[in-house]
Image (cartoon, rainbow, N blue to C red; front, side):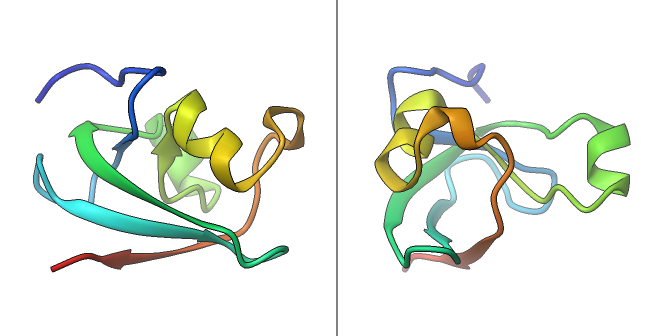
Length: 79
């Protein structure tokens, strides 16, 4: 996989193969973004704390202000 590109609609995940298209939705405002898994992450320590996915800046700012930090999301695979 390629490294996470903050200018692209990409994501880092341990749970899905590289190239998997995901729809990630912010549970607070129902905004969604379509991303592609291009990297592995989040950091293992963060996944143990319940973090399930890292989004590029571009993907994240589509569904939430960057200043929000960590937000609750749902993740589904796009066919």
